[in-house]
Length: 215
Figure 1 (cartoon, rainbow, N blue to C red):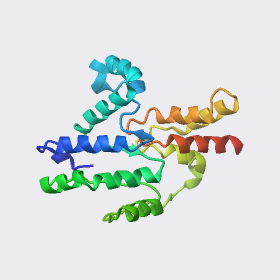
Figure 2 (cartoon, rainbow, N blue to C red):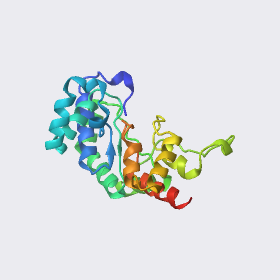
Figure 3 (spheres, helix red, strand yellow):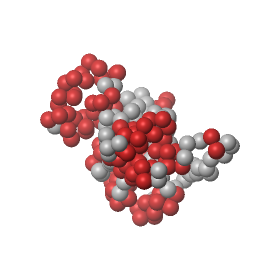
């Protein structure tokens, strides 16, 4: 992430593109713009058909091309990992030449790890990194009795832009019970509208299975 006013600073777009490609190289489960084929991103409308066809033949090359291009136009790049070792390897990778170049050029690029507090701390300890800022969720307050159940909330809150509706989660649960879909397919369904690519499809599939078994 960089402050928006720095997006046009000379050289910073290249640094963001290099960062995006490093993130993609370390086995993310989901990432910014991963689902562009299904969503038909407006900014890509002129070339969407061609990109979709190319993605069907050379998916890895097109994913690198697209994420690299997106990274030069946005102040935020996101990716989701389900393996802690991949995160550790990514941090170690970034601490090399990429970090040194950014320091020399004064680029204000922040690396943000979002996850369970202990997991984030372990990643930093294993890479010799130091956390300098914390944002800790204290839980839910107010009329919590009006909220969906805990497992439903676990899926709904995976998307910070509110693209996963409670009724959609319930509809998918009913579909799993009826044999019309599977937990993995339901997880892919709720992940599809999230352009940011931060929905954890593996964990969502597990939660869908719990929801089916609990009723």
